[in-house]
Image (cartoon, rainbow, N blue to C red; front, side, top):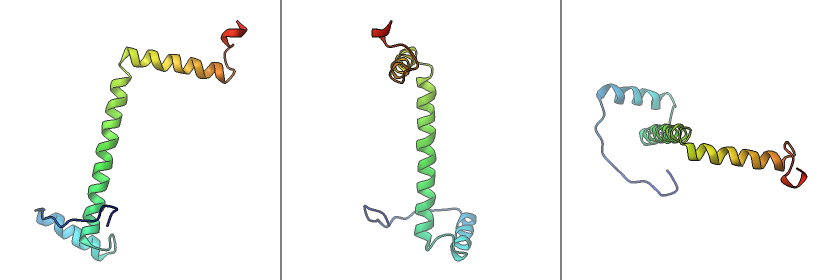
Length: 90
């Protein structure tokens, strides 16, 4: 089930979730309960990573030093792309 193999674990889930999961697996949503749970955990972890990344970008967008660095980088690439005169041409 993954590159690192798998390990048997035990968790408690609400009865209603178990019933819905059993129904979903029977309907072909996943080949097994373990596969269904693994996919759900992967999706949740991906959403957490995306949220943390968005929070980091939001913080960076308020950091004056970061914004200054971005501006300098954009100017350097604009000059390299021929959108601004190079320093030697001025």
